[in-house]
Image 1 (tube, rainbow, N blue to C red):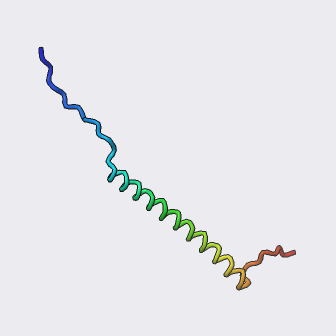
Image 2: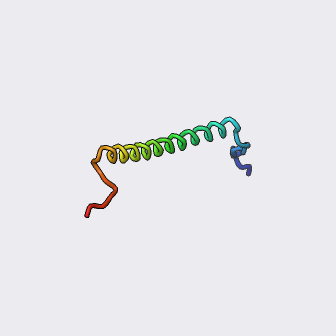
Image 3: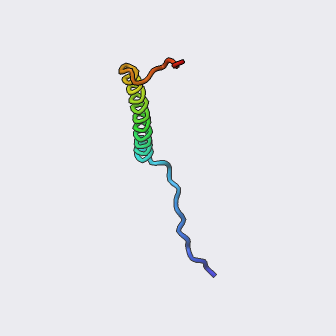
Length: 63
């Protein structure tokens, strides 16, 4: 009794171009998120100092 032949997936090595593309994409996404976070922090700091200069807020505790 002869069994049917089963097609098995052949394992190949990593595709260099695919790995570079995936790494580049993930790097750009992570870098973009980091820059957005940095810009948010800069905006908060700039807003704080603008309000401080205008006298809207104070860092001295009123008695």
